[in-house]
Image 1 (cartoon, rainbow, N blue to C red):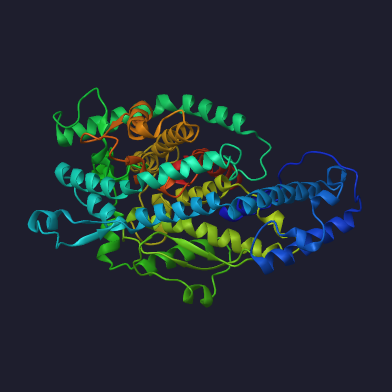
Image 2: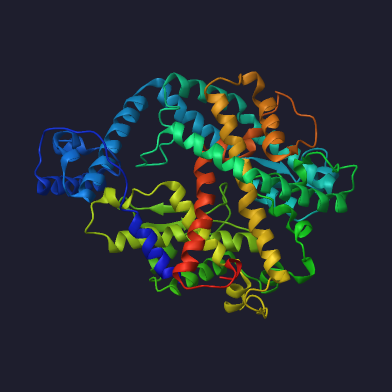
Length: 522
């Protein structure tokens, strides 16, 4: 089923927009040669935008008048690449541009390199000689307990630790403003799009207005279940939810999965099954590989695995190594052994196989045509693949859980549990990303003063998420730093659009495969 879907999706990577007009070289054969020659320069330099090494640029061609639509689109994308590369080459030579990069590196180091004392160590050893936990271990320790006090401890300590990047963030925003990087390149990630930034902003707002009523219902449902566990002294019946109850992060609510499941007694505890089997990180990656091989895709060669690293490091999340041509040559990752990360790993492998399929099957196309998909498109494809592995149907086929008998069209407790997991993993993430999108827009345009960064962060958290801090926070804190989106300068809008695409892709794939039962069962 997914073979068809992947083929369709990969094929659509070849199409994006065009603009402007000129009277120069109109020979389309020469134009194709220019693109292929550009590939050689790109491969040798491993950089975009070095086409001037060929003695010509897209400006030497009347590409706006080409009759070959695909060629025209390729030139439009190449022209964008040239223009962007030229601007950023100029910026990189300025001391302000170099400083922006330094600040970005400093923020990433604080975010990924932060460590805090464990909760038990904190209680026992006041001298600081305690067990230190990295970011990934803090998340896992927080998710392993339902204690409000313990979760509050991890929430406060982790926020305080990463909040050290406050001054770096303020300086970076000021420099970005001076260099006019934003908003001119606000939607640079939406590569090849014919939409303006203003149009995308409006689309996001319209989408949020449609989603918000459902989000409020989810919020009310979750709040009621949290009150049942923690009491109304911690969670009020008509107020915001204290953020620490979700764990250190609010970008997804997987930390309350044991509380929020409608039918917990009907749930197959995948995490416990994996642990009882002594599953390793490599085992989870092998299972991911098997999933894609079952679609008819080739298995990864031994060089990929020999170039891969599965031991703990400061990043502790899947990262892929790419060749200049676009082939994925290896990965590094350390992940806990649980249900959440099993699905995440399978989704991450989407990048490996999609990129390698493009590398292997599209040598006839110039490189620019295999790189036109927006990052939202890539993320959505990954999430859609993840969705297909969250079902009992998949888990039982690979021998992790027992198959649950179901009648076509009749909703079961397992179906409802599955949908709640999807909501807590993906749907609520939209509210977090939209909050960040609105907050960052106000900071970079200086609508919000750097003296009010934290105040506005929590004002937006209350407005868009119905979430409040568990303890008093001031401008001495910098709580936005807890988000990788903020720390790594990742555009939050790309995630919002990706999640919307995800369910459209999934529905279309089900239809293409002839699936006529509930979507949650495919």
